[in-house]
Length: 84
Image (cartoon, rainbow, N blue to C red; front, side):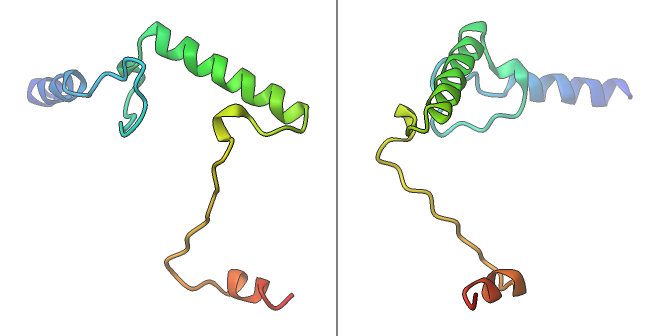
């Protein structure tokens, strides 16, 4: 990699927004965006979700939420699924 490419890569890394406990609306591009507290929080949330799944309950984080799959292109597999 040339020195110019390395400089551009270093600049891209330093301009990525840090997560700092606020995951909403942020793009995750690199692990460098996370603090240790962010990672520990993420692991705690996943442990809670795993426990809820094993108890066959709705995780607190997902309570009251609805998931909708949106497809923007026709697909023979999905269009034929309604015929079954």
